[in-house]
Image (tube, rainbow, N blue to C red):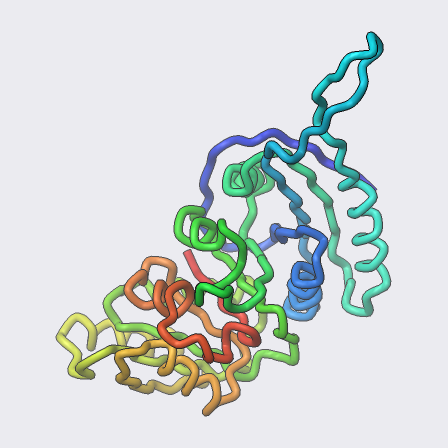
Length: 295
């Protein structure tokens, strides 16, 4: 097993046509293991390079005082045994019936996670980031850690968010919330056939709004473009009006037993409330439904 240690750099990359490299963020917790298991199920019919990234900032509590050779006290950095953790993780992956033909490369970085992620995107031409979540925090925000919103909004790479209770059982139903204000959504969705096979899936395009469902000329054109792109794929159009957008999403998920929700990263008006600032803490999809945010 190879073991990579890197230093941080800054770079961006966008989704490319041939998907080959996936970056999974891990802290060796049960939630990050669940995101690995979900990824193995989702990508079981193709072969990818999975880069498993464990990154840690150098914090004050990572130092300790020890006796030096002269009988004094020296402050040294604590040694973290991430290699041992990775050895255990790779053995666990190898025992999984979904391991397939994928290649797994562990990476340990002592750096800010955002910087580390951007660096790996540049070095390995990462096409997709995968991260696990705990659902909702006590403050009512999606709990992927303190860097969750930064990963999705500042790192220009498509990101799959896997909640703690998500289990891969297939992709029969895919929901795509939209307000039809971005013309490139259809092209973004067309690119996901490089990620996974959705030929047997049904797309549910959901117009979500707080007040009116009357579409202007541009919105109508964008809606028609989505229809044209997916004319050979099963799809339907729906409208959900509610001042609490997350209720609209939950309704669609429940009605169609949605397996995954896909959103465009640029559509901040929608997914900031849906993902990061819910007004209702009892929403179930935070714990069970994966979100794929496309750049």
